[in-house]
Length: 551
Ligand code: GLU
Image (cartoon, rainbow, N blue to C red):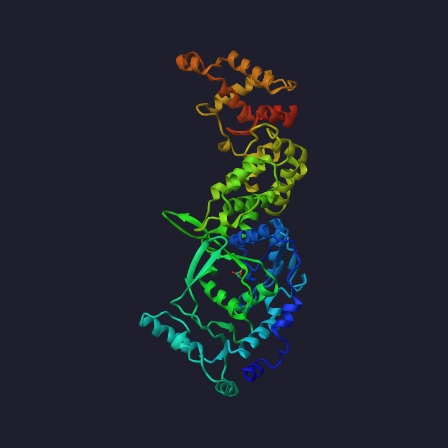
């Protein structure tokens, strides 16, 4: 239908072959994979996006392939300003870098561009024109009102809804009939002319889901919309063909459209890329699992993790663990390895859903932070605090050395402390270090050892401050001294003995240590007290004892 094609696309002079030549097969090593992240610029970064991007990024990078960014902005109503820059920045924060694709709102790098669909209009139209010439696509004049009515009727009659078979009113017009309607000025869109048979099944191998089968597509899907831009289906087939994508990894919500895509690739004569449909991240709610919802679940937004202060690599390692559950064992076997050296296997991904578990994320994050060198912890924290906790920022900036000494407690031991999963947990665990906070703490916030009253604690500390020796230089010696002091004032050093004769003693040595801890930290729990006293230094330690006694 050359005349028709010419009438619809008079300005298109290229043919598909021109583009296939312009974007030749990539010259890559044998097993190198070409993948993409293809978000729509809607301005909301969903954690599922990072998850999908990570799958694509790992598959490409671990095979020395190409990972590129394509912006799918054919639905221009949904576009939000600044969303492309935001996507790129977010990806960088999570350690993912594109080899090709958009580099900003208007710029791109790579030989297979443009990488923004709204700038590829001429390309899509060239392919659509070719399909019309070949009688594989046609203009459809059905109005949206007619479509609604059709759908209603089909639902009532319990038929599969859609534009297919006998309902595809413009499927079989003659070229002249199409031309006439266009010349009359009737608005239209372009549909693909399906010859699929819903009774026939297609066997398919998905890299993640395994072997699947589905009925052939028999719907005449829209390929070019009224605004001249393509639908997702059409753009996907053209773009992934011309950009020479080898592996389309995308959310499983696209699985129901796969029959359309397979049909389009085949009808146009282009080889199918491999597909891997990524399970949707879900969350357990009671007995059921549901999709992470933008409205209900703050953790669906990528910004949540930054605000809470999860280091990006903790989120990434958690997601790797969701991608392949063997990650955890790998991490145990390779405690210090860079996560990039873990090999992701699509066929080992859970087929039925990725269950998001924040408790697990916290555990993993604690482990990772515990293993980080102290300088890194400090740097991460101060960068976070500058943005999200100005008061702490001022303090840790001013008291850098102390902060680092504190964060370093027990780091070099076989069991490093696992105090924080995210940076917003630091404040509460560290603020007593700073006098600016410490002396402002209301008395009712002060924690005392269980069963010890304030008077008792004060009396212990009154005695202890007299024997406190700032010059001891081992934790063991310090504790020995404390123990001796406790015994001298009538506390028991042996649990069993205390249990048998509770009336002989005022309490246990641990009560004495606890009272000293309260005076120094106002807490029942803290890292090693001896080290904290060393960090505070003699003068401040004594001051804390003094002030505790006159509370
Ligand atoms: N633009 C699509 C989306 O955001 C991308 C799907 C794909 O990767 O092909 O869901």
